[in-house]
Amino acid sequence: MKRFVFTCGDINGIGPELVIKALNKISHAETDSFIFAVPMNVFEKTASDSLASFNYDVVKKQADIAGCKRNVVIYDIGKGRQNTGKATKESGRISFLSIQKSFELVAENRESALITAPISKTALFLAGINYPGHTEMVAGWCKRKDYVMTFLSKKMIAALLTIHIPIKDVSKSLKKNEIIAKIHTVVNTLERDLGIEKPRIALLGLNPHAGELGIMGWEEQRLFNPIINMREFSGKLYGAFSPDAFFANKLYGKYDAVIGCYHDQVLIPFKLMNFSSGVNYTAGLPIIRTSPDHGTAFDIAGKNAADPSSLLEAFYYAKKILKNRLKNGKENYI
Image 1 (tube, one colour):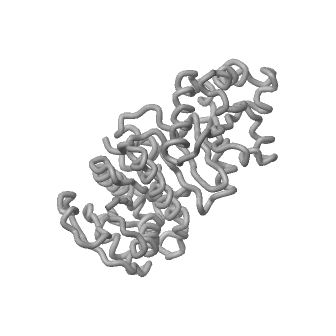
Image 2 (cartoon, one colour):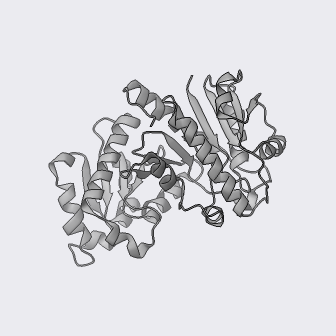
Image 3 (cartoon, one colour):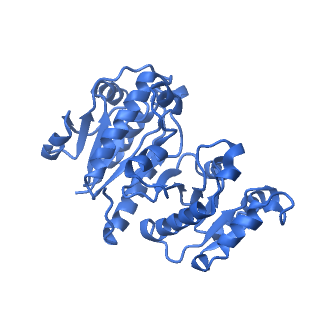
């Protein structure tokens, strides 16, 4: 039986509500096992508000999960004090604990995947957690450096060369060997995890007009083009494209993935196309981790108004990737 582990995200946001609404839809139709790592008091309140329609077992110890009879298990990680709609030190602590406990469950079981609900970077900071987000956190625990923040949807797959850094630091952060390693990760992800044969990948330029032959920047001519022309990427990597014209002409439809240089370069068009259905995927890890492509939505927290569509997509992509990895004999545990 495949195991899918859900974190609660920030308990002052919509995370717990999203997971319960998702479980309402999938726990009856699926034969898999679902584990929800959340404070029991938060679960009970949210389950009442969101009208949870599934049966479940409750455990307080990881070792007790194996003895559960129902396919939904609430992993009680201790009481959490809520302050709905606000990022707090307590919500940061609980969100981190949920991720930590959930990661342990996935790391020990090759037939499993991790689906993370939205967290607040502000809350993490207030709690003294020294990670800017899920991606860096989970990659650090996996001891992997060639991971790639990737976004999945039916309309476009996008990947990033840099993640949560200031714009002024992007250029100096682009290193040839690291770019090559990340492109290999994207290729492997498309082939192994998503089952795409002979993938075609578009690389966006960093500068306006993709540098205009060096007039508006040197990165395309001196850094990107030599990589694109490498024999190992022949027939796979194309560019470097001017981002504005690339998206205006909908050229993303001709490629299996688009690689951008910095966060907003691809996330603005991606979210315009997929705000309620996009999925954040950490490519290049031995475990599978997906997440909805939106935030904590503090403004609607506690109002039972959250749309679980993106979290459901995160589950369906996790299930697809797990199926492909198991079919190919690839282990996904540490």
